[in-house]
Image 1 (tube, rainbow over the protein chains, first blue to last red):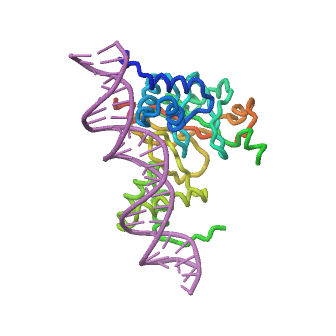
Image 2 (tube, helix red, strand yellow):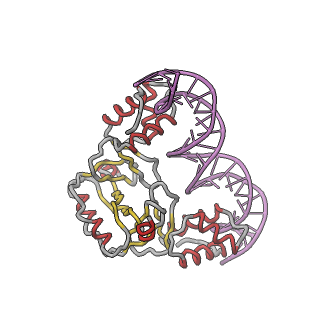
Image 3 (tube, protein in one colour):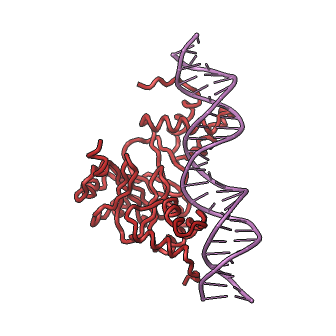
Length: 129
Length: 129
DNA sequence: TTTGATGCAAATGTTTTGCATGCAA
DNA sequence: TTGCATGCAAAACATTTGCATCAAA
C-alpha cells in the first residue's frame, strides 16, 4: 500500500473536486484552493492530482486542445465536450456496446480499452447561438 | 476559396505523408523533409500540417500524452495506440454502431461526433514481452 | 527522527507566433 | 508587384522536476 502522509492541501483538493460538477482543470483547482491556502503552489496541485489519479481516486479527462480535466466520479461514464464553450459534461450512457470487441475483431494485438469523447453543442450553446 | 500558393516544402510534406503508414508526428515529418530541404523550419512544418488539416486533406490524431500525429488517410477509420511502444495503428473497423445516437439519447445538447481511440498492446509488443 | 509533502523556480516538450525576407502568381 | 510562405527565434502553454525546507508519523 502507498505510504502517503496526510496533507491538508491534498485534503482540500479532494474536497473541492468532490463538490465540483464542472470537471475542473488543474488551474481551476489551483485558483480555488488558493482561497483557503494562498501559498499553495501549482506544482503541488499537479503532484496531488497525479497521485490521486494513479490511485484511481479521480479520473483524468484528456480532451484534444484543452488542458486536462479531473473528475471525482470514477464510475465508468462518458463525457461530452462542447465545441463552442469547451465545457465538459457527463453523459448518461449505460453502455456503448461491445466496441472493444468490435475493434479487436480483425486486429492481432490486445485491445485493453478505449478513450471516447463526444463533441458537439451543449444545451446552453445550442439555444444561445 | 483558399488562395494558397504552391510551395515545394508543402508538396514534400504531402508526399511524405502519403507514403507513410506510421502516422508520423510533426517532428518525424520535420526530420524526413530535412533530408531534402535541410533549411526547412519546424514552424513551417507545423504551419503546413495545420493548413492541410483545416482543409480536410489530412487527419490529426491527438492521443493523450503524446505529440499529435498525422494521417494522410482521411477516410473515417479508428486508431489503436500501443501502451508500450506508443505506435499508432489503423484498425479495420466498419462501424462501431450508432454510438452517437446512444450517447445523445438522454442528452439535451447536439452530438456532432466523437473521438475514439483504442489502446492496449500491439502485436509486436504482445509477443516480445 | 525519518521521510514524504511542500513552495518556489527552473526546465521540459509541444506547438504557436512575430517579423523580416523569399518566392509564387 | 502583391501578398502568401518561409526561416529563424522567441513566446506561449501545460506540465514536470530539482531542491531546500516543512511537517506528518
